[in-house]
Length: 233
Image (cartoon, one colour):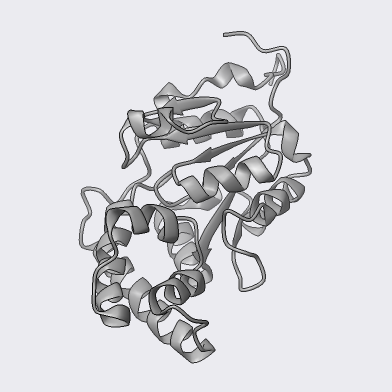
């Protein structure tokens, strides 16, 4: 496929995208939804209200009112601690997504600006950096995460901030996402191309979503020709 307009950089969501951990988040939030409201989140609620949202947003939805800071801190800490333990207890699947390392090597070798924009909080981001050695591919200072000041997806803020971090206009960036909230966030941010990765949902789920520029099952399928590679690099 040829392109008249090339992308200059790339922004990755992390959870369910570079690391296929959606099932672990499902399990942890289902457990905590019972504590918060007495019933588990449905699959539809998980898609619409959990993925891409902050812990505060999720807790507020579950209890039907603005939670106290103490409640957010308590449940978020407990849930994320449980989640990280589940990650470490499943070494077979505790790795970057299929084809991700090779694709990240390609980006690095060709000096393509790149970063991560995730609604994960600092403790989880530091956990990922340490366990996956993300410093091999990313400037850690340019990773954007939920620090209490950035609205959760589908607000556009996180992708606009991420594009600025790598010195690009959002229209010159491609975003890789797996969640509806993240896809809508990228659309609102004016991202140039949006690629969905079917890590949990089937391909057919994404075929119904408007505004996508591609759907992949793994990073081996990513169309690298959307970047203009300088000869001799």
